[in-house]
Length: 245
Ligand code: ATP
Image (cartoon, rainbow, N blue to C red; front, side):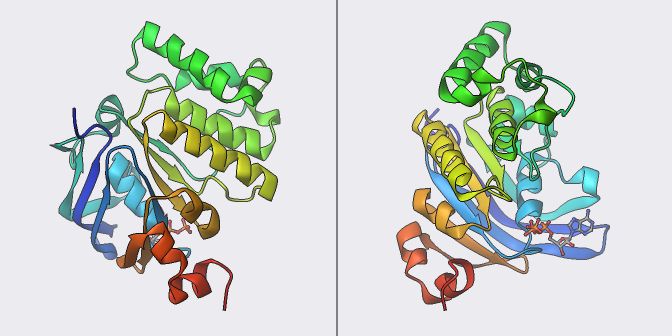
């Protein structure tokens, strides 16, 4: 479909525990095939927004009280997480939540939710081509991988479901600059194969270097948006997120 991988979040409001208003009317779009960055300080609501998009809010006593999540031309606001995965939406959660005691290969195979057998094995082969580091460590226990390798594995596992949109929650967190570069290159090649990306990052320099468009979230509201180039030259953004001022 023309809208494959397209995300349209409209006027989304999210409340935790029937009490705390955390997202205050958010509208965000990820056009087909693009990389969109979402910047913001700790506690701004970035993870909450990703959870609302992937359907993982309810486990955290979070509720959408207004607005909608549109994906690939359909309203998915009240679909279960697994139905969203089936439709092509995958999330990589913050903190590289992989199965520590399983092998790299087992972790990847576990990600093949909803994918048919043949598709899954094709995707698996493609992933090993794309991430030689995972190919090399295929039989190793995931818990012994380095931080960067675990992040690659977490991303690889999400890709096993064959998503058209990938949600990434701070993939560069805690990684050395050289490893951040590898993650960045991986995102570029994933996007190059046609998957749209919504990238949550505190590393604004990295995020803006690959994004087409970016949003800045503060206290549950979008306070700024524009092309990555425009945001990079915006003084407020630069002072706050690019280590300037
Ligand atoms: P971080 O980068 O630290 O993850 P964030 O921008 O992703 O920050 P969120 O994790 O979305 O922010 O949190 C937004 C607000 O919602 C914070 O004030 C947080 O304390 C609150 N919050 C998050 N999860 C819950 C929950 N399960 N119950 C109640 N409040 C929550």
